[in-house]
Image (tube, rainbow, N blue to C red):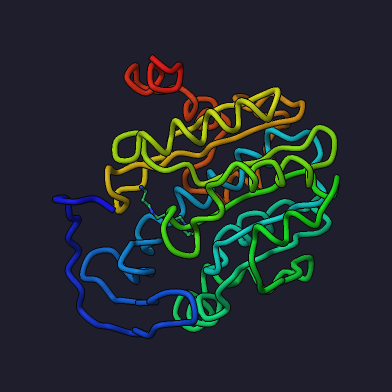
Length: 271
Ligand code: SPM
């Protein structure tokens, strides 16, 4: 996806390498960054910095919503997003839809500190196509989180307008979506496309930026849409016990994530 650009991490051991029905799955031990999950040759996470993305993709929408009870997560078979949602005691039900059950199995074997998200009794796992799953739902969720891979291979359908329309229909009144939003440095065309689609469908739209040193460009975006609540400030206070569990998200980071460099502001303004 990045012709002429590479990020190098020294691998000390290959723990798993196999093609599933959908993609090539590789799990490596690295010298400096702990274990690393790679799908179709693209880094999905490392133990070194996975928490930045997982915390922000989860807690930005959950804290922007005044009372999130019913949650849907699409993609993210490693379980890290489920782990973060599970920290919210008032959440009642978490539907989880992932197309590739081998990613879940590999994560349970090699990334237990992420896959512990699957142990939460509120989680209901659905193996299948996330787009098809969403299209069958109406007014079912307070928050929907899309932890997709990139828009090639199995993740492609999750970047289409029909999918975003389905997300909107699947939300309850006042609901919020938060989707993996690519990089303001590396994927400007996708960033603009996602922000425009969300802006056309939702009365409230915002784009956050999160530091992830092991993603190309060093950061990734979160594209959000809301049927009511404002997004750029938390709607609720965070408890001391939850804040103590986190390494990246704070109420201050919530607001700061939506402050973008000027070139990105211009990009999103269509200038
Ligand atoms: N739960 C973690 C799964 C990671 N899902 C998102 C992966 C995105 C990988 N591509 C990053 C490159 C951004 N341009």
